[in-house]
Length: 346
Image (cartoon, rainbow, N blue to C red):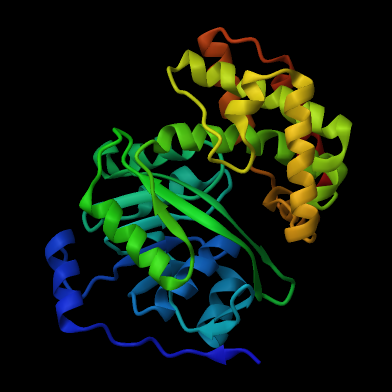
C-alpha cells in the first residue's frame, strides 16, 4: 500500500546553514523543479518527502492532479507526496533550479523564470544544448553540469514508476570542487535518489551522450525494451558506430570520453567496431537480468504521441560536426530517420 507522507520539519540549524550558503530569504523554496514528467516528479517527490522545500512547474491536467492527489511514486520507491505547484514560469522560485522538461518551447519558458533568486541551475535532460539554454537564461556562472543515469516512466493514470536509480551526477564545468555542488548532491542523495559530485562533468556528459544517441535511435526504431536491442548484433554495431562519431566530435572540442556512463564508451572507441559491439551486447545481457522492463524515455514519448527531443540532441551534435568539420554519416542518417519517425507518428 502506498503511504502518504507529510513533509518533516528541518531543524533551525539546517535551515540557517542553507540560508547562509545560498544567501536566500527563508521564504523562498530551496528547489524549483521545471517540469512534472517522470524525472521531475521523482525528484520533486523525494526531495519534498526528505524535508526540502520544493516547487514544481506543471500545467493542465498534471498540475491539477498533483494539487489534488500529490505525486504518486511506484516501483523502487512507493509513496504519495504533496508538492507545491505553480503553472506560470514567472512564479517559479528557488535557490536551485532543476530543469526536467523537454520540447521546443524550453528556451522561451526559461526566459520567463526570474533569475535573481536562482543560485544554481542544472538540467537533467538529454543532450548538451541544455547547458547553452541555461547559460543564456541565467548566466554561465550559475550553471552546473548534470546528467541522470536514472529512469522513470509516467503511467497512464498519472503515477510515476521509478525504474532505475544508478545516479544523478553534478559538477562544475571547470572541474573545481564547490560548496554548492556538495550541498545539492547531499540533498538529492539524502532524499533517496542517488547523486554524486563529479569533477569531470563535461567529459561525463559527453560520454553519456555518446551512449544515449545510439540507444535513443534504436529504441524508437525497434520500439523494443532496452535489453532486446542492446543484445542484438546489428543494433549493437550501429550503437558502436554512433558512439565512435560522437567521440570524434568530442575530440575536436578537446573533450575526452570515459567509461563512467551507461556504456563504456572510452573502451568502445579505443578498440575495434566488433569489440565495441560485444561490449554493447554484454550490457544488454545485464539489462535483461536487472531491468527487463526498462524503456528509453524517447520510446515512452513515441508511444504516448509526444514529440521526440531530436533537435536539441542529435540535431545539436550534427550541427557541431558540421561546424567542426567532423564527418558524421551515421549520425546524419539517424537524425533524418528519427526526424521522419517523429513527424509521421503524430
